[in-house]
Length: 266
Image (cartoon, rainbow, N blue to C red; front, side, top):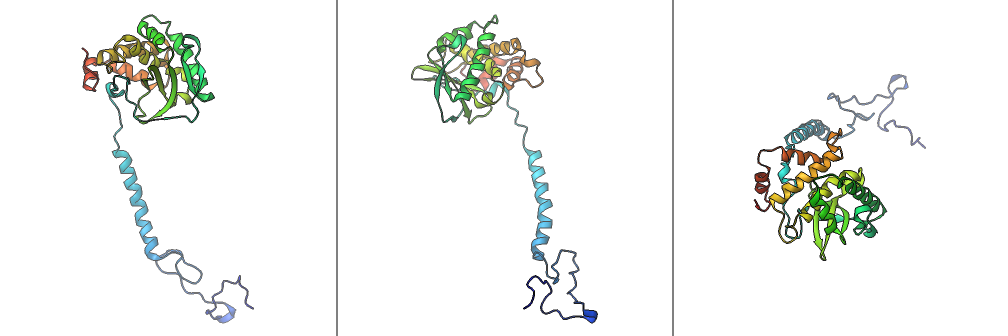
């Protein structure tokens, strides 16, 4: 019985000296089996040799053609409604939405989510309470009082560039923070909380969509909080702090906010 492990082809006869002559390798230089047959079909191999470099070229071209995606700071917060400060699109909440008591200046606020969200919420609110001692944040302090009975929760926003949004649910204010704050130092969320609370304490919202003048006042308060916390001096400042600084550095920030779609309350 022939050895099944013997790769010698059955139809190859012995040459002089007992050697077996194998068919010569194809002259195109592509790999072949000991029988001389190609490892892959010639057309497939040649096609891959042509298509792979072409695919790499197209990929590089596509990446270089993508715009940088810089968003004007006035457009970073899309206008909401008379019950929502800024439109964050659809939101995905955590499966667990248990409530825990807020700390410090927001003990009447419910922290929603799982234990991780509760821990991050406490860090964010403690930082908020600390920064509210800064002079010039009167409207935000009024907003904390108006926030009583409300809630704080984290969510993955459809509009990923939006860092926060405040909405009225069952008559109570609920501040939503972008889920990214749950996975970094949550204290960096304090300035955006100041922004939302300034809108809540300023007077027009809820009842009317956020106006450009109110948004500018909230941006000034956010920027003040960023400076008080030293966040703009960090190697990697929060995106919201950079946006606030850039907007306030423009010649006509109020006009920019109106052009971005916020209600004209000038």
